[in-house]
Amino acid sequence: MGLSISWEVVLFFVLGMALLYGVGWLLLVPFQKGLYFLFNSLVGGLLLWAASLVGGNFGLVAVINPFSAILTGFLGIPGVALTLLIQNLL
Image (cartoon, rainbow, N blue to C red; front, side, top):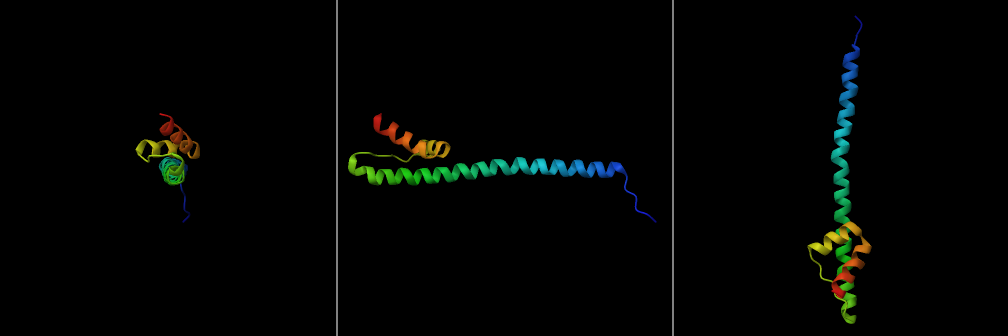
């Protein structure tokens, strides 16, 4: 009364696990990048707000809008500097 598992079952099990791993990885990586983008956008918005608060005394104004949030989300702190530069030079 031995248990015999054919090699086809083992092969399909391994292929199924590899497919499950691949699909899980494809779903997880964009989620992590989205969280990273959201975190950068929030930090960039806070930095723009702080720059407006401090820079208001010197005539340096930063408007927080969807474009500046996306720019700071992609670029981080250099995006904050670029947003300040664009808004105050143009």
